[in-house]
Length: 498
Picture 1: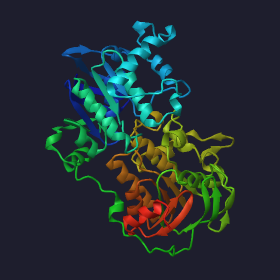
Picture 2 (picture 1 turned 60 degrees about the vertical axis):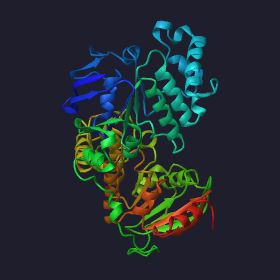
Picture 3 (picture 1 turned 90 degrees about the horizontal axis):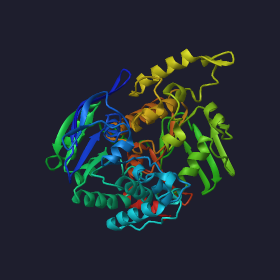
Picture 4 (picture 1 turned 45 degrees about the vertical axis):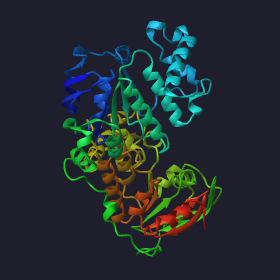
């Protein structure tokens, strides 16, 4: 495959600018770049989801122009999306049936036996055993990804495109995926691997193309690169380090000036058992622990998504009965764990998403109606302040890259100068530049006097950002310690040791 001078514009916004790219049979070619660099736009063109504004695409030196993903698939191109395109209530076999070739009658003709025979042969070749009758939504993420790979491989697939395939995988599932990709490349298929994780690119690929703001800034042999070279190419200079790396944690007790902003006493709900702590103004209290030990329940209680069974939440001494509206009224900003499911209404514009939470404010109303001009002006200011890279305030949230979606969530959480910030896995799935940006935004909120609760499964992030570290295990608070605590001791606490 070869792309020549591909350009894609959305109105006045240029997402891709004269991009050249090629893929050889039997190689793994990585496409690297920050969120918003144009990676997904390029792959959507290569897979038939988008048409280029300018430029041409060639397969085996023959110019092609795809009219749809089905057209690209018919010419041997398959894509595995970061967010899977499965129908959860259908079985594995039924999901595979939906991808049946039109030439074979398509799903309406129900060629279930032919589809299963072909797919089972593919799975056996890859060494996979799948529960064909199980509901897709009930399966682990790694198994769901295997179903997507089988969908993409059906037919005469010569090229496979993987968009951030490890973003949804556990550390133990990632090596299994890499083994599969290497096996497919050894069979002569061309693999495009989109990622922002430098270590994965270095470990897996043979060549790497780096995009920055819609342009190709480097095309390199991976064997001649290191992480520093790739990071510099991604960000255009010495890679931005998260501000957390230069942070000097404060004293262990919550004794900063101004007393406590938020106080939690004997909070119990679901897995949580009698959790108590306080956070002072300008303090970051980080929560460490293996995922599934009460972090979700704690975030839900503090963000108003759940009502605790017992216990008390106080903000500046005032009791809070948590509901989403009460949380907003108490000036608590929330950065939820899942930006797409809980953070954004993807079908709505940036302006509309930034309106959520201020729609009842008198400054944005004209009698019973919203003041559209005032809200749009506010959105434009927040887009500039939080460096949201988009066509404009009327762009749909679904059209943004993951990093820019997260910036919209952060802009809404921090725009009102909150007293308290609840940040749940705020950098999950982001690249080094976006991570640096999120850390900077949290630091600025801290400097303004906000009390910040950082709930993250990234231990390095918790240790480098936090003034104090609270460790959760099985819903219990095992202790609140200094971020300088040896990792061995933290590991024991995270494992349930007293």
